[in-house]
Image (cartoon, rainbow, N blue to C red; front, side, top):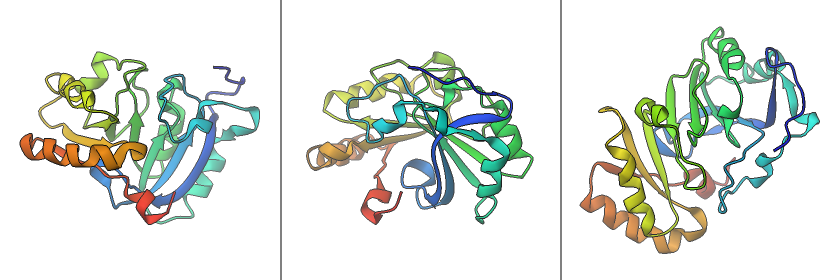
Length: 207
């Protein structure tokens, strides 16, 4: 993965940024400003934003200019996602956001060390690149994508290493949801520590 040179103190590679409703996990239904950082080397075969894997020079964005755009909207909830956002040192971006009073959530595979000031860590581990053990312990939310039946057992392998306050979600992968949703419903009914996460933004036809 090639990442163009940029000033890490004042800039960050941004694929897209937009104001919407969080469609997944613990904050489902909440208005939030999404910052989707460009760049990923995890390589999920079912990824629905493969265009986020590549970093181009025109995606390098000034952090202060990004915050000026964010301030046009009323919600104080920020979701930093990707790609894989923890490829980068998030201290400059999160410090700038915190100075304006924002609540910062991150969605990560956990393959890279935590950086920055984060209020909520959504860990969505992937089989293609294992999460770091220390991030499993820090996660506020464990969100497992269910692509096939073997993913239920794989999901359970993370539970014992999470904190007592971690929230557990199983999310049927969009392209296999007709097959995996009934199995996920049955699994959660038998294992009620888990909750079902649905990609509600796709049903609502919003970003």
